Every structure is written in structure tokens, then in C-alpha cells.
Length: 190
Image 1 (cartoon, helix red, strand yellow):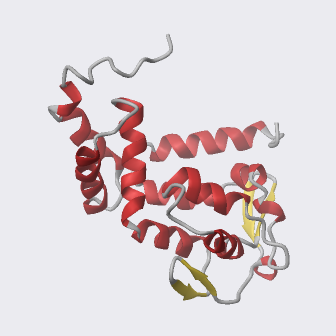
Image 2 (cartoon, rainbow, N blue to C red; image 1 turned 180 degrees about the horizontal axis):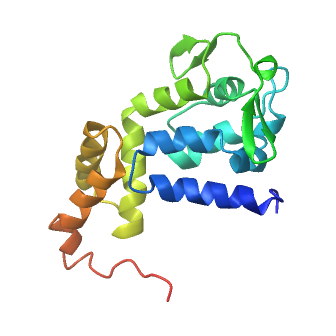
């Protein structure tokens, strides 16, 4: 209900479908400046003088690296880097005068970061690949992940530049996927 324009929901859905088996890092970059997401998590109100932390928090907490792997300062600094975006019609527009151009220190790195830089730095963290692979494991296999398998999937994810397809191929063709202890362990809705 926050985003009142159905076409924006359609565009975001199409974007997710386009990248579902593709490059997850690129998907995150695109979602970060997607008009629907900018409206939903208040990115359109985030300016250099009043950065909004909603998206930067969700970006790290839910989408990429998980709780415990970033600080409140990281959230604040990322919020500054994500400023400057507005929505006009069905498009996202970058307005330089609304963007915080000061240096930011994020996850131990300092620079005049923008949204691409923030995502790149998040994906440099080893935990990011594990966090995402853990989510895939929980969805397709079982709620309690096998961390040995997670680490193997995360290596594949990183070695394939964050492409989802090789990770799923490895997961679905593994002996672990067909283990009697995990087959039908994940109960799905009818």
C-alpha cells in the first residue's frame, strides 16, 4: 500500500525475475535504485541534509550480509551514500544536489561512495556469500543449514562472480540434496 502505482510493482517484479538465476550483486545494485523500492523504503526522501536509514538497514540486514555483520555507523554511512535519488513517473532519477558528496567510512573503507560502491563493499565481505547461500539452503533444503555445505556454496558463489545459477546447480545436483534426512524436510504450502 505504500507504493500506489501498480506499474512500479510490475517493474520491480520483472527486475527480480530477470536476475533470478543471474548475477545477484547486479540485482542488488538495480533494486537499490528501483523506483518501487525507492518509494517503499523512503529513498525518495533521503537527501544529503537528511539521509534516511530505512533502505541501508534492510540492504544489510535482510538482503545481503545479515545482522551482526555491520554496525549502526555502517547503516548511517551507507544511508549518506544512497542519497540523491528521486522518482519521476516510472523512472528513478539521480539529482546530484540531493546527494551527500562528503567522504564516508563504511565497513572500514573511506571515500566519496555512491550506491554502487556500497554494494561492492558489502559483496567484498566473505559473510555476504554465506548469508545468501544460507537463505537458498533454507528455502530449498531445510531450516537448519549444514555450514560445511554453506561454505562450499559460498565459494562457488564468489568464484562465479555472484551468479546464482552455478550455486543452484551445485545444490540441486549434490548428494546432500537427495539425502534421506533432507528430502521432503521442507514443508511447502499446497
